[in-house]
Length: 320
Image (cartoon, rainbow, N blue to C red; front, top):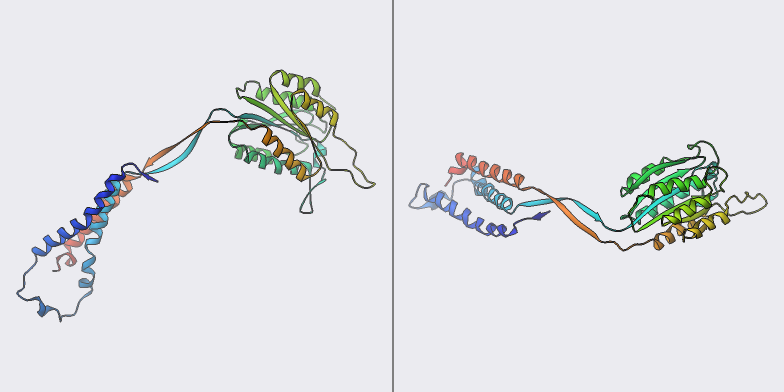
């Protein structure tokens, strides 16, 4: 809330004077007694006791009118004018292996996909000024969300993702990268980034990951790659599925980095490092739209003054 013309609040100082003058003029019109002491012994009715409060609505009404003159305004929203930031596409693997529960949180097992969603949500909170979109892939790629500043909506879209929703259980990393590139092709951002998270190797698709990476490099797009999957322990090892060599080559081709995430803490740290690496200086202009609230104060003032006038027409107003 703010006041457009706060100087008018100085008129509040005149209200006690106006109240006193009004009561003084009313008393001059009352019946005069040579000696009022003869009335002191009479019992006081409730009207007599309440009568000193009659000027209160008058004073409050004047105060409301003064506030209305000062034009109170309520700020509706802060708006951002984005000038220069980073456009990011989050590229997520939805192949069946992402259901593997080899991540842990407070001794509770989590699937690779669950862990990814939790960490990405925190990543989005740290990038409020960046346009971020999302592409998922398995056998085929699918655009989940275009580049947007509405990260709350993006999280809602991400929460609905599950394995098996993209036609089969194969992994088309190259096609996924190509789809992400198409989302950034027309971007005018200073920095354009793809963050690829997968737990497998490319085994399907029309475009190889290496050729897709070369296309990204030609368009000035960096591809950070993350190999997700728990560490092998004991005799019952899960086969090492992440093609680290291919993911490293993709990242190096685009002047980015490859990360290996074998647990929730490491995965969180990886997105934290990417967040630090891809910071861009931005200038943000903030402005607020204001809604006029003087009308409600004006109405309140008129109502209170009307109540005071009605009271003056009753016995309360006519008492000496």
